[in-house]
Length: 58
Image 1 (cartoon, helix red, strand yellow):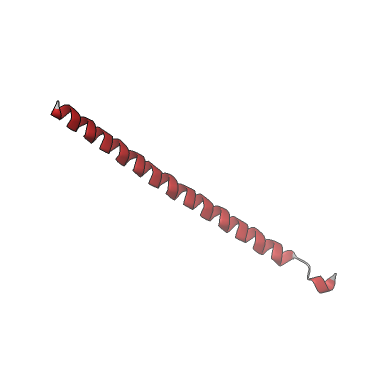
Image 2: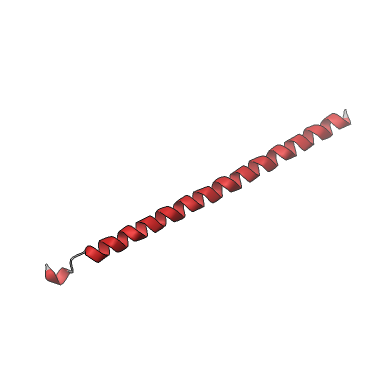
């Protein structure tokens, strides 16, 4: 009976470890995606600023 409980505890610990590792990978992936999107927005803003007409010309 004790060995069954110990085995179940080890299985639960392994499952929690796998879930935590998957969460970290997902978090890293989301951070990378957000970083790329931020860089793209910065490039678009820079391009828009480069072609903007100064107000005193209008």
